[in-house]
Image (cartoon, rainbow over all chains, first blue to last red; front, side):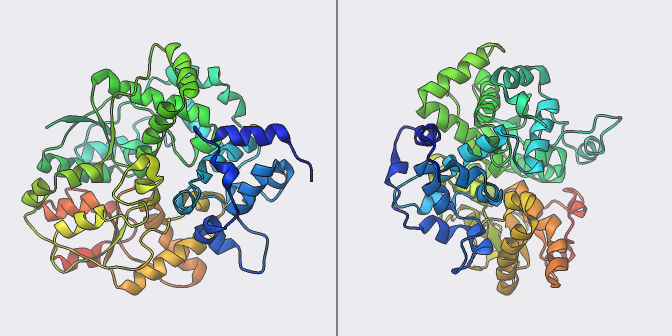
Length: 172
Length: 290
């Protein structure tokens, strides 16, 4: 297993204002309380989604064990933030997992719904855009329900933001 | 009373606007004033944040700038939007390097993030006005048995969500009790609905949803009450497929807390578009004599 020191440093730096991740002692409270671990793993298997292993591999700089493994390793996380609350060392696990997901996306790998949502936001400013042709059925429904139409954002504004950040290059 | 900027979010605004209709009616009764502005997607704390945290920060900060420009706090109808906007605020306030970077980008579109406003989940605003809520209830929902699902992003991470308790929240429970309905315990109140993992791995999402739904069914609840559109969609649109997958019938109706309140405040099911729900609400309405 190769240790990637640059990756290791990035993981350490990701934690806002602390180096708490160093103090993980692999107690496994995160995995014990993870709803996805519960439905993908049993006591005798080492496959499935496991937040504890992710923290260990990230901490040690074992990049391949994270990015060249079953995509479930990263994308099994359902972002429920339960691990963050049960961790006795106050490690913000979900934030570290966000970093792992971002790295995976930068390499063009990730579930379709993440790419399609990013594309929708880039094009319309909304994760769920109103339809472009004719009178949108939702707009009609809003009128029927007696509520005002949704105000639309200035698309050029955040397209400028996203292009300057370089996020547009990651779109599929 | 203070006026809030309404953040209805993409899912409610463009998919399930009947929830916004019920919420606006309840806000009127309670005296919560709102106005609109050109918000974009918050953006999604499970989608866009996973795509690119820097982009998520910048778009979120732009939204905060719009409310700051009017000096008004945001009221959000959605757990995800609240979590993103509060999370963006948290990252920017605790990381000056990120703050400088985001403001450099915002300057190019003529904006600056200062961190002067607050973001409120509507459940907390209702809870702060509980006396007015109780005063507006004219038809108490006596006898209705409710399973509450506050949803992960309403209360976690505690560091920036600041609800009453990240693992044993009581706010939604207290709001439901104020309507006259009875809250039934089912033991899996804080279990995630699994919306995000279902989008990527349906079989794992369904295995999780089954644990949740089995507990709710066993409790004998008439209805699941939620305060998040992603959780609402997960329960309302996926119960049928869950039933097909596991060859069991799952048909517990799902309601937003504001829909429940709208009925208790005297609005009719037609006033708030309850017919647009996937899981039929007939048993609930019959029990309430509506």
